[in-house]
Length: 347
Ligand SMILES: NC(=O)c1ccc[n+]([C@@H]2O[C@H](COP(=O)([O-])OP(=O)(O)OC[C@H]3O[C@@H](n4cnc5c(N)ncnc54)[C@H](O)[C@@H]3O)[C@@H](O)[C@H]2O)c1
Image (cartoon, rainbow, N blue to C red):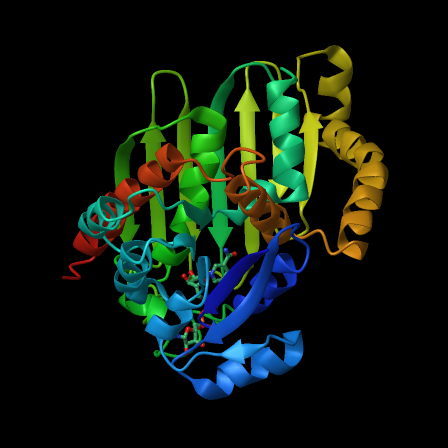
């Protein structure tokens, strides 16, 4: 049995506690939070045996430390965990600067580091990966990520107190790892080509740059990330265009659809978008059935990732988040976060 200490009992901790219950070897044995009240709440909900009274005590009593605290606390906690020779599972963003990442890696020794890059394990992204690997859209040419979020309902943007506001680039830094590892997953480590950021009249404290467009470009593939916090809409989508077709992912409903738009008279007469709507409807029925089955089995992306991490620790499979992927994400978050701040004159 692998003893797990979960540190940070806020919003995302519930997904981790649920996920550890579905692993073959891991059991959350101890909780720690700077707020004892929050730790007690999670203890009652998930029946965890103990609450530690310090981080040090939590680390001593476990083999794996699962860190769910805000990003600005991660580097200190991670170093302490790794210096004690314990394995580390940590929420993204792992750290808030490339220098902190170097110092974390320097003390890792033989300990394993896993990062919660959970979007990789959604039903839709896994489906898209299968289609790309099977050659269904040919070679990947474009990946376009759209993230429109309403400042009235985005829990991190409401008000002026959320910890994400102080990150490099503000709230975007909190989600940026997802955008970068998805690009890495489908197109490899594309370098940053440009970052355009505007401070418009819609800007809010958490997103001083409320309109952002990031371009990543390699030899053949270009990837864009569009953030907006001045829209009243909530849209989260990923489009992957290949030489033979395209995949559209609606992240909020966890749906992926495959389409191809080779020119033909029929397509021109009916309209490419109308043909695609038909294709989408045909794919929707089996897709929703599979999605609902996963939901019923509580097979969340966190559960898939944490089970893979637990198996990896037991020597039964690869890491769900290889370090080259983590390294790419952290280094480019560092570059992009600072470029966003510089573009809007934020120190
Ligand atoms: N992978 C995902 O989909 C996903 C989703 C949400 C959040 N996150 C990430 O999870 C992390 C936590 O986010 P959240 O929304 O749960 O935050 P939160 O503010 O809801 O919870 C953070 C908890 O950590 C505690 N805490 C703060 N500093 C601490 C310290 N030094 N030691 C111990 N406890 C401490 C707080 O009291 C709080 O209970 C962040 O890195 C965030 O980016 C990931």
